[in-house]
Every structure is written in structure tokens, then in C-alpha cells.
Image (cartoon, rainbow, N blue to C red):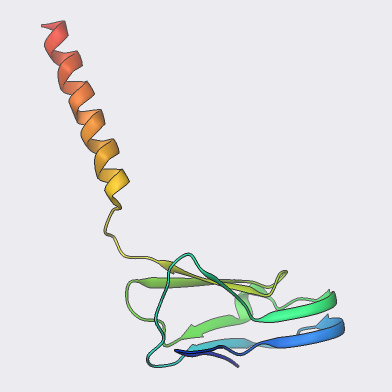
Length: 109
């Protein structure tokens, strides 16, 4: 189990070859401030013999509106916003497309 807390997170440094078998549970502790797009290095190794099976990785305590992904080949965790709220650039693109569509329609009449 690796814990991600409000001030720090667990890390494992292996100077030699790392062989990971079994399950990996990543637990987000109360008070953790989610910062979408940031990555957290949980594991570091000299060489990788066997990586965690992607199906054996679980996340606990992740708040609503967030998703997480763990790359077993790099040991890197990423927290992403999974809310359905579009970013402002999405609204700008949609507005531009609607404006272009309406102008094209007017010129065809």
C-alpha cells in the first residue's frame, strides 16, 4: 500500500532490480489537495525485472470528480480531473464553430 497525504507521499527507492508482484493499493488520505495534471513518483529503481499487472492496481479515497492512473513501467502516478465541466477553450472552440456555421448558412441564402 502506498499512501498519498496532504504534505507528502510514500516513495520506494530500489538501487538494484525491482520485481513487483501482487496487488498495489494507492490510498489517498483525508486532506490531500488534488492538483490535476501533476505527477507523483512513487517508485524508483535501477532496473525493472517485473512490473505490477495493471489489473492489480486500485485507488482508494480518491474524491469525486477525480481520476488517477499509475504507470507500472515508470512508477509514476497522475491525478486527473474527471469532472464533466468543459474547459474555457472548449467553449471558445464550440462558439467559433457555431458562428462559422451560421455565417456559412447566411451566405448560402
